[in-house]
Image (tube, rainbow, N blue to C red; front, top):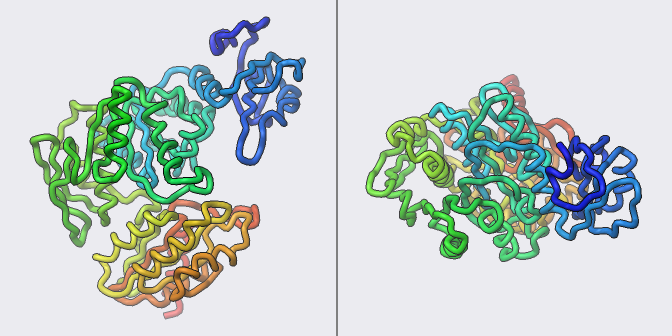
Length: 484
C-alpha cells in the first residue's frame, strides 16, 4: 500500500508501506512508526532506533529537521493519526462491530453475545480481557482490552480471514478510549454498563474516568449508530443527552429501561428466573447463572444483538439464553467440592465487583461464606481498603493473600487491605491461602476465590510464573482428599 493511500500530505516521496506500529522494536523496512508519549516511555526517544530498523515514515510532534533518514509527518495528534492509519492499513472491517464499556461486565457481555450469536448461526468474534475468541478453533490467550490499534485491527483482519466472521464484539477500556485507540473502528452498536471506583490512579477523578468512557459515544460510535445504555445507573440521563446530541439512537435497559425492561426477577437454586419486556412483548427467562449482575449482563447482550439484528426471532433468542454457561473466571464454579461446599473462581478485582459476587453467592450459602482475595500492585491503591471493608462486611471468613504484586512489596499491599478488614487471616502465598480455605469448608459453605479469574499467571517482582486459581484449587482438593 502506498503512503499516499494512507496519509493525505505533500510528501516528496511515495514509498510502499509494509506495516504500522508504535513499537520501535517491531519496525521493519517500509514501516510507519508512531512516536507516542506513554505513561512510562516517550516514543520520540526511540525514533533513531526505528529509523535504523527501516522505518519509512515517522509520526511525531518534534521538528522535521531533527531526523534526516525518514519522511516526517509532524502532528500534535499522533494517537488519532495512528489509530486512523491502522484502520486504513488493515482495511475492510466486519459487517457489524460492537463495543462495550463500563467498570464491570464488559468481558461477560461480549462473551455472552458471541455465544448467543454463534447459536443463531451468525459468525462472531470477541476481543478483550480474555483474548480473541472466534469459531470453534481460533483463540489467542492474553489480554486484549482495547489494545494498541495495530494489534486490534490485525486481530480483526485475522478473524475475518480465518473464521469468516461478520460480527466482532470489543471491550472498550477507559485507557483505550482516553488514548483514542478505537478511533477508526466503524462501531455500529455501543453499550455502557456501569461506573464505579476504578483506575483513578490514571484518570485522577471519577468525573475524568466517566468522561473517558463517554468517548465511546462522542468519538467512536458512528453517526446514526445505536447506544445501549443501563437505565438503572446514575449516569444514564447524562449519557442519554450525550447520545441525543450526537444523533445516536438510544436503547435503554434495566428495571427502569423503556426498551428492554426487567419486569421481575428472583433467585433459584439453579440461577435466576426473570420476565423481560421488549417493548409491549414479554418473555420468560431462565438463566442458569447466579447473581443479579449476570442477569444485567445478559440483558445488555440482548440489547446489543437486537440492535444489530432486529430480525432475530425473540423466542429462539430466549431459548438460547437459557442454556448459557458461566464465562471463564466469572463466578466459574469448580466442579469438585469439599464436603458439599460450593467453590467459585471470579475475576472481581475492584470494589463494586467484589461486592456484587459476594451478594450473588450469599443467597446460595446455607453455612459460612469464605473469601480469598488480594489486590494488584502498581495499580489504584485507593481501592485496597475499600475492598477490605467490603470483605469485612459481606464475608464470614476472609483470607487476604497476594494477587499480582508486580513490582510492589506484597506485604505492604496486604497491610493496606487489612486496615479495613481486621478479622481477616493473612496468608501471602496464594496457593497456601486457597488450601487453608478449602481445609475449613463444611457442608453448606461457599468459597469465592477472587481477583484473578481466568488468568493463568501471577506477576511478582517483575516476573510472571504459571498460576491458575482454577487449576490450583482442583489440585489442592485432590491433596485434601488423599489425606482422608
